[in-house]
Length: 439
Image (cartoon, rainbow, N blue to C red):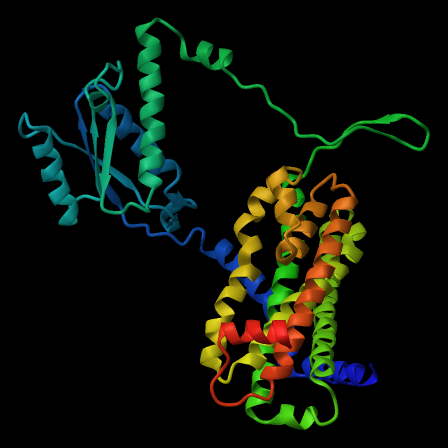
């Protein structure tokens, strides 16, 4: 045991005393904050080139409303500031009326498509003759919007809003209804999302507070993502570390003083210390940032110990697998081939976290969070969603992860013992299975 501790301390110090560790600690929040800041700064950095849109109105009653709405938008939303120094921040929508050149509807659409291809138009819209009074033929009661830029939806969304507003006005007028009366009659009732009522120290009922949906979502997501990133950053380098020691014959020297299992366990314990150090720095920094923002009461202090337990077990579980992979291969190319299925298991919680977040008490969420490789991330996610989950579920999750971790360490130890001294050709999966069974 003493030798294992010595190896663990050496691995821990070798990791945390390097510039790479400090850079990785600083880089992660910088990159995340930089991504948020970049989105903020570039949100208004849009193409301000005017968009010319042709409108073929078969109803004869909607084009004027579209043209007027475009002029109002250009005066209200396109420019920022006042006077001659005002800045153009959005493109103008220039509306052009077109008429059908023939009775064939496809001919007009084709001619307009050619104008879009040649750059004369940005897009065009063909308004069906029965849009105001829909009949059985759906093609005659629709608006067909055509463009060569399917990802640019600003024109489409604006046109949809303008047309629907004008069509509703015409339909109300046809049945002699005042739009304001209809608007008042169909006004939606606001629904306030509140928490539960409680009693104060004197036994008086306290009013429920409004739920902060942003914080309610960000806290669980933040804790899960933190655990996932720390596992990925701290555990995955074990494979490369073991492989380098094997290729440089350092492992042969080490195995003259310790057993393969002691060597592997020392590396695992050391990397657990590294991961917990990283998590502690991020948790303290996160709490301080939340405190400064005035949201300290939303920090899940009651989950810190659960986070530490699940974090340590996740690193042990995946770290043992990475150690086994590093010991079984002879070069980085073989390691990458074996890493693919392992990484798929590591990222598996990222595929289902949204459903688990929305319905943490659903049967599917419970079962997925009890799948040992995904338990650390998904269980802490469910625990962070108010009002929490029954305590037996994380306890069962801990038990299952412990059993799985012990099994992984046992199997990895057998593979590590045989593979660490092998040179030349790496082991096949069938050989690794045989080592795990026979030792």
